Amino acid sequence: MGKTCAELFKGLDGTIIGNQEELVTGLAFRSDKVVPGDVFFCIVGTVVDGHTFAQDAIDRGAKVLVVERKLYLVDTSDVTLVVVDDTRRAMAQAASRYYGNPSRFMQLVGVTGTNGKTTTTFLVESMVKAAQKKCGIIGTTGNLIDGRMEEAAHTTPESPDLQELFARMRDVETDVVAIEVSSHALDLKRTFATTFAVTSFTNLTQDHLDYHHTFEAYFEAKAKLFSSDYPAKRVISVDDKWGVALAQRCVDAGDHVITFGFDESADIHPTKVDYSSTQTKVELAVCGREYAFTYPLVGRFNVSNIMNAFGIGMCLGLDSDTIIRGLSTAPGIPGRLQRVASEHSNGVDVFVDYAHTPDALDKALASIMALNPRRTLVVFGCGGDRDATKRSIMGKVALVADYVIVTSDNPRTEDPNAIIRDIVSGMEAGKDHYEVVADRRDAIARAIELAQPGDAVLVAGKGHEDYQIIGHVKVHFDDREVVAEEFARAAKARA
Image (cartoon, rainbow, N blue to C red; front, side):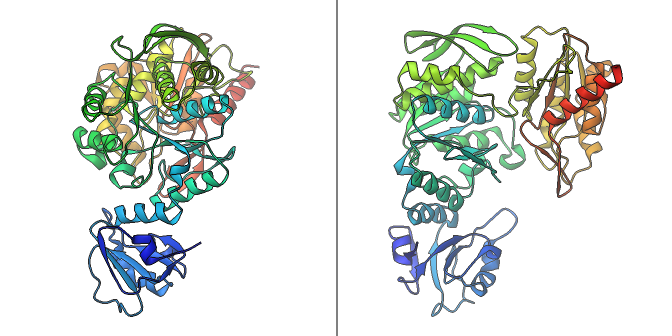
């Protein structure tokens, strides 16, 4: 595979200085990954400027450099420069073109929002499967290609990696791809030059303010997926002010919009919901029609995800019977209010959830408390090197439970005890309702020790993750495995 420089950058706003017929056989944005024949994109990051690695890329065999400024140290008789205003945008456009614009060969569903993205993509996959079509997934828990799940480094990959994924999915005749689109990805143009059939907005709650700084900037990053850069049908939650504003923006632009939410003004809304610890029965009003069905997910927030998926299914052209069949048989979502079954549970329900924002923790606890357990206990911590302003808020939110055990999450390069101090600074009102157990395994063991038959325990923050990041090192740690092991240990101690 290869394209000439002229073919790859034709029509882009920029100037080619040098050999326009230079053959490009690969795309690179890290100089240490360059191999001969690659074009190297000098990405200007928040910490590192790729222009400073231009010579390294040349030394490794790059014959074409995409830059935002002319590099006078480069001999353009041997190296072709493509000078553009925005190397990230150019990289996304070139990547799509290099792989033959693969997103045009499938129905692409982009899901953005703070919470609910992963679950929604899995629900889309279940509906598409019910339609006897092939669906791919790109997101936090991995990339599903041709029925096989591959590990993912980012929720939304960098544009060359993303377009390569699309190309592989196209080559195995994938009909629909459901992709989680993060605010970082939109801000960094990773999905630019991608063709979407449907874009969906789940909600907006506090997260990533270390990057975006303000809610308004965070919202505008998400809203890019609903701009003229990404024409598509829209499915939007109107349960918060951000969704209401976004839906109105899309209506004003003349977009096809389906809204969902708990208020009866939404196009899709529930008229009755019955919860249990293993499934939910819902009656939905959908654009004037009524549907009743049961699905194997629990919690109020999953009602939102079900409504979102129903709207997406409609936009994909699926009939209601197929949509309901897919939703009714949806698999459990890894680490999303996932019930950990154990023969040693002694009448205690334990749920593992990815909740790592104040709103997600609040909703997870509310969902468990709606099941009317005798008591609710929660184990949680906060990640290091991430938005510190949410820590005390999460501590305050956790106090809705009967008892809280504050522990470590992924401390990364921060002191775990300093993170814990930030959390408990918001828990002054509940001094008798929490304790600190810094070691995460010990904290889970403590919760299982305290829990009595009829109680429910929520282990929050890491969900599907099977590791902890301590310093710069990943060590194996899966909350679900640890819960099962500690149940067995407690049973042995009782025997």
